Amino acid sequence: DYNKDNYNNTAAGLTEGRSWILNLDAAVAVTDNLSITGFVTREDRRTATKGPGVANSNAAGNAAATGTALNTDPASLVGCSAYTSNAQELANAKIDPCLAWSTDVRDKVDTLGITAKQKGLLAGKLDVSGSLSYTRAVTTQTFAGGTYVSTLLTTANFGTGATAWSRTYLPAAAMPDVTTKLISISLGGKYKFDKVSAVQVGYTFQRLRNDDWIYYNNVPGVLPASGLPSYQTAPVYSLQAISAAYIFTF
Image (tube, rainbow, N blue to C red; front, side, top):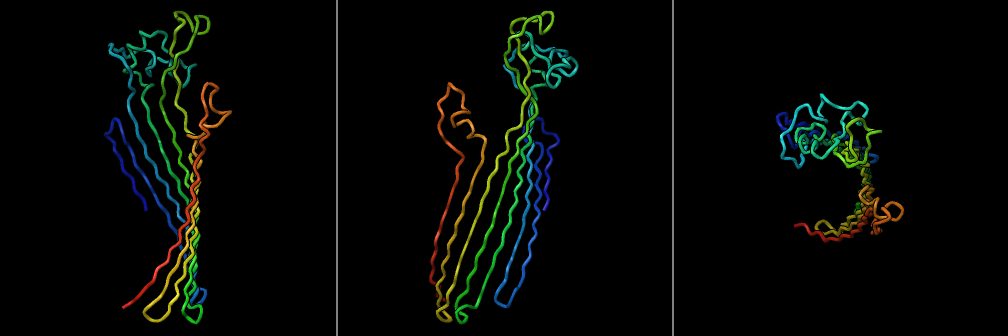
């Protein structure tokens, strides 16, 4: 299954949405009463967005200003020169192409599963089944663009006309991947008392584990010394469920 949406005339916001899903499954009849089914699924989803740079500037700009594609410092990061004064940034930040940004978010999900069913146990009165599945999802986030940060530079290391105040371009960096793992186990049985009545029971266990970079700065040794760690860690969820039902057919 493949899907792709394009938004070619979008200047800001969602520019592309794409996804494809591949599923393979197979079933084997071991005997008349025993069957085994297995499957594997791969999902790949991508979302792209973009937007222009936004800066607090009310002054008129100059197309040849520092930061434009026609006037950059090749030695600086990604070709975006630093502003050497506050006035220069205010006059040109609105038209600075280095402030334009874009994001690319991708989700890749792999799932494996197997199910077994046995019918006709206990003189044909009992049917049992069991299933096991494992899912691993990885979210990747990359960014283009950047922002300006304050730095202290002198004439000696910046060049003629530089001041002690400067705004240096800092390009955006990709976020660490977010990984989620889910394991699920299900067991069930159905016992027939007669042609019209039966009892059915089931048990399900699920465990989800998440490795998210947002929790990295919550523990000692990573958090800056001036901050108080919350000791929060990435969540782990466990679920157990038991079900029972009486079935009457008429």
